[in-house]
Image: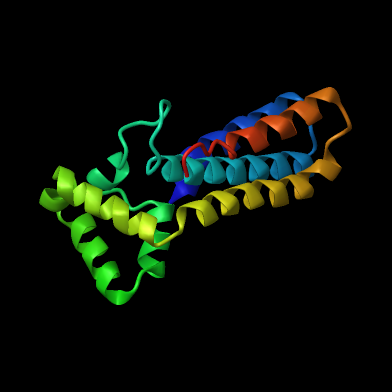
Length: 162
């Protein structure tokens, strides 16, 4: 799902940059795959942030209210006991329930009760760290490489209230 969303754009940009830099096929493929992983991880963090509250977040629970099944929501559905899983699925599948303030709040509470938000965020960070370990031997040492690594880690470590 995410590979066709944010990740595909990131992958395409990385592939173009590698071509412009006259990188070989192996480096081009590795950069494209790294960017795909970064895009996926970023989307996971963005979806986790959708359940946080704070000054930079969109409307809390906006994805739930829209009926978007996100990585954290899928993780919550797997983690909850059958009764709460059924209730969350009912909320997600019912536009009337998920768009009503009380229904959306109940859905958010169920996702929070599943205790999956922080593990999802950590998973995103781990994905980027593992992908970096794969691509870093192919890139020459440089200030740009150091800055790219720092930027990528910052992009997936945006948690404030999770």
